[in-house]
Each structure stands twice: as structure tokens, then as C-alpha cells.
Length: 259
Image (cartoon, rainbow, N blue to C red):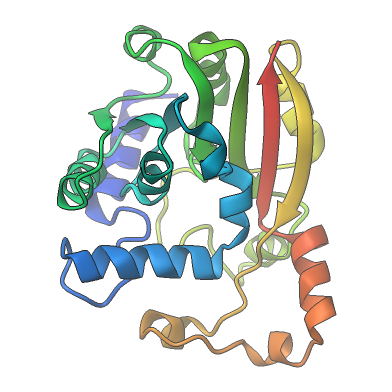
């Protein structure tokens, strides 16, 4: 791992924070943020169940890689004591503006999840949550050590990473797709279930691992705000599309508990 690579990761996500184009409305307006939320959970409805926002009322929640605050808003609205960190200063600025607009309580920090002293300064948490983030960082082990230390006894860790055994990763391997909607992502990795068990061994008890999500829409129309299935997915019965998501989904969803 080099400082140069970390700088490239920061620059990449500062240039276009994740999901920033999920609305065609004026950025920063109430309509813009409402449309960003609507699109996120329409395309990825499994995330509500995965996060379990309603379960954390009155609990301390730390999000590693808070992005533009889409999940942060849900945690805060459901009464969590929320703290979010992100490498991207632009993402943090947008999250703070979003919370101020909707009069929500929470705090955000520009911070590296691998920085032990910085993460320790935030205190202890009932949940550490990281959705689609840690597969973009080259030192997963350092982040997991800090997450373990940040959790209270029996605290929960919920993490979403990309799945190797997936439709999309197969397309990436054949040069027919890329990790992110925007090109030239400086670092991304997909994981098998076995690799996740190995990474968490000794620090976390794995409660559940499952797969979900396969992006099936025509990309140009999706960018224009329309939802039209690609013809090969449209030709499938709904139960076949559901099977693809369950067994070949791009999202590997892990729920674990601190040992």
C-alpha cells in the first residue's frame, strides 16, 4: 500500500462521489436529495433489510465510508446516534449539507478507516456499518482491526463487499463490464465467502452471509431516469431474475458480531 494509491482513491471519489448522479434535479436541493434516496432504495431495496435502520434507535452507529449520506439519513431518522467517516472530503461536505437541510443530528469526519488513532478517538459503538466501501481500500486488515476495537462487547459489524461468484464479476473478468459506473477506479476487489470467513476469523463471529443485487437496467436510459430492463433480463421470468440475484448477486452481505 502506498500514499500515492490512497491519494488516487481520494481524488477519484472527490471527483464524483458515489451516487451523486442519482438525481437530475439541482444538487443540494430537497428535491435532489429525495430523488437520490428514492433511486437508491428502488434499485437496491435489499439494503434496508441489511442495515436494519429501525433496529438502532438510541444506539451508537459508526459508518465507515459514509459517502453522500444516503444511509446516514436513514440511521439518523430512525433515532441512531450516528457518526460517519469517509476519505472523500467532497462526500463529507455533501453529507453535512444534507443533514443541515433536513435538520438531522449526526457527525461526519474526513478520516481514513485504517488510521487507528483517529478511529479510536471516536469512541465505542453498538454497530459499525460499511456498505460498498471496504473493497475499495487496499488494507482491509487494518480497517477490520480498527472496527473490532471500535465495537462494544457483542457489538455488530455489517459489511457489504463485491462478490466474486457473481454475474457482474464474470462480465468484468471477460472485459464486458467494469467495477464502477465511472471508469478508471484506482482500486477495487471482489471476495469469496471463504475469503470473508478468513478475514473475520478470530475477531468476529459470522452470523450470516448472503448475496443479492444484479443491475439489470439499460444504462443510457437509467442515466436519463428511466428503468428499462436489458433484453436478456427482460426475457427472464421474475423467478429467474430473483435466482440470479440470490446466487449470482454482486453484493455479498455480511452480518457479524464482535468476539
